[in-house]
Image 1 (cartoon, rainbow, N blue to C red):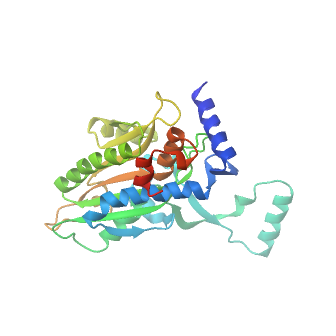
Image 2: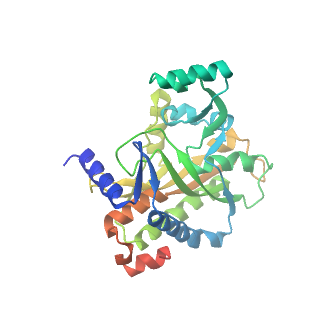
Image 3: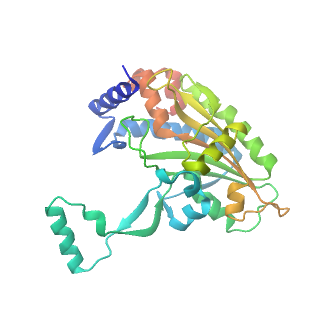
Length: 305
């Protein structure tokens, strides 16, 4: 079977079992109650590890300000993944024209205009402007636990590559030393969490699909300087594992974008760890089966199931 065949076969199994619910668009699914119980179990497991650090908790909607996306620099590297919110802003005549277009099978969205809202590409994008608006960081820096729905425009039949998904992240803001130490700590923690779930994995330097010439330079820098590591779990095939957790060091990218300063006035460095809760859930169902009550007792205990 080809990789595409493996993706389609697992997607169809999940749909037939009712764990995912088709919404008629590749990469867009509803989730069953059982699926959500496992997702919340993963959040519980991450919380047990991270809560003792006493992070500030931030929960965001799936949208961020369009200007925030621009200022973050995301459009420089990944414009192909961006989603924005559009809305009807016309008058009665425009409405009638839209309804005529729908009746004729045309594109009724052509008359819509972009709003000031963009869809968040990652959970941490709401953190940096919020923390930056407070002024200089305290001596100990800042630590944030965030969670939100994210969007990336990459439609796929691979159920692990959803267009709308959730990320649970912990974000560190402070000095270079604080950011790097945080990433190393969470590299160990992330591996321990996934191991406790009975999943096979490997950790490797990431290779993000950046766009264009600027993106190629960023990708080369990311690999050469080992700025991002991914924890990979084989969901469909051992030869093609899926990134389920990422460990990222951004240097001073977001510190410069949002004018975040350390207590001594230097530009802050940031790092984050991100758990793809849907991907981990899909890996659990793949490796342990669809009957959660038959999963290893140790795994159910970690998840609180």
